Amino acid sequence: RIRRGMRDLVFGEPGSIGLDFEEPTETGNTWRLRATHPPASALKMQEGSELVAINRVRVTERTPRSEVARRISSRPVSLTFRLPKSNKEVPNSEIFPMVVSEIVVSELREGLLPLKTAQPPLSTALQKHQEVKARKEPQHLHQAARILNSVQCWGTMPGSTVPAWVEDLRVDSPLGKQWAKTASLDLFAREPGLLFRVLMFCGEASTLCFAGRSCSTWQKLLLDTAQRSSRQLWSWVLRHGQSISSPQRPNFWHWCCRSGEAFLAGLQRAASVQEEADSPEESLLEAAARCDASGSLSRLSSGLGGAAPSLEVATGSMQKLAKALGLQRLPSKVLDGLLQDPWHCQRLWLLSDAALPWLVMQCRYFQVVIAAHLPNLFRHMMGEGLAPELFYCRWIQGLFQGCLSVELQLRIMDHFIFERSLKIFVKLAVAIFTSLEKRLIGQDIEKMMDLIFDPKVWEIDDEQLMKETVGVKVTRSMLKEIQ
Image (cartoon, rainbow, N blue to C red; front, side):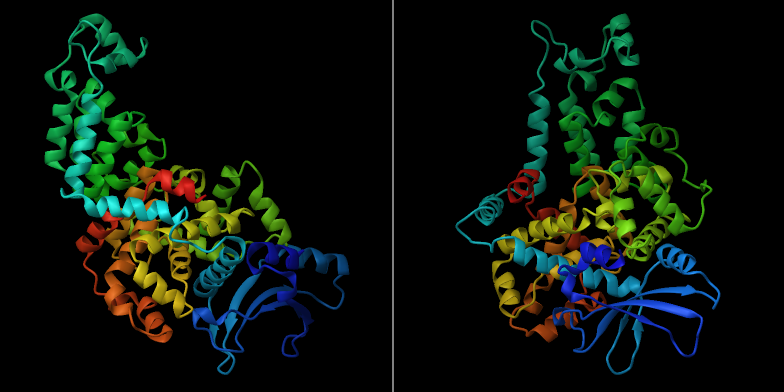
């Protein structure tokens, strides 16, 4: 069961794993079930190194075999990485993302066709990129004009000056009852384009929040993000304006995860109330089990003897994110939301048996976009035998923690959670490689890896990186075509 589960999770062909039983002489009452796999050299691992997955159980001479089997199946598997000479061990939190990245890229190369410039999906991505480069006006002005034009297209009701959006009001809603009673609207409600223009000029997400809470009419126009124009307004402000403030961010994430009541009620206070829960690992597994309607987590764990090898990495990412928010742990509603569609963190953190093919497709997205935006760098890295998707896969498993400042990481998370798409991570990774392009071109594989693996020497300004990120052209239609 352990062999089958590990193979399905990351290792590919069953022949790549060797299993044996050991009884260490120094601890005669410990049995170890060991699975070894030599990692690939593309991640700069020394020849002769091996990844060791060990299941340790304590037994006595009189322990029945049935009890030994039960303990083996119930104990978690620990992953360590052994270097050939020093026998130094690297913890699971560091080695596991690298091993997964190598397997994902291997699956990508074997399962998908190479990119060709004249054929989709790369040809489509190149066309979109050239269209952006050909524009004379700045991107933020182009996007603002599109939003204002979309609002203007709402129009008015036939034969009157009443805005057409009023027709969509539910009769039993508070605003619908108010309209039926008074049939009056303020100037900004009658001219929503003017309201949008003023809020764009302010350029603050917090102002959007307070404006939406000022009256039921503006709440409909600004906080009802089911309207495409309202969502576009929020996205524009998050990209080009001042993001949400730190005390408001947990409640903003609540709202984005369809917990709007918590956001509106707690907008003016920090989220200081902590929820009772067990350990972070247990809390994450319970949340994953709650959100797992298809049973993918249970299928994965049953194949691994009840273990979840990625749990340490996932818990570490979750805890770092909570710490960045100033909380002891993520609110349960936010965590539950992130684990589900469309955020897919359950797959991102390998807590699902569908994680591997899903990660392969995420790396394919990035591969197409970087090939379109940075063709010279892409060809150079591939010519040196270094796939840029390796680093992208490793970064997204940790939500880019360790690559960015805390404040920039939270701003990126604002985009990810609000836009309900991982495309912001694709754009961010391309922006990082754009900033490092001049230092990577012409270097051999060793020097490139030394640079990419050490974010401390990148020397990339947060504002510049954010500007580069929002400038990368990635649309949902592009991602669908790649898929």
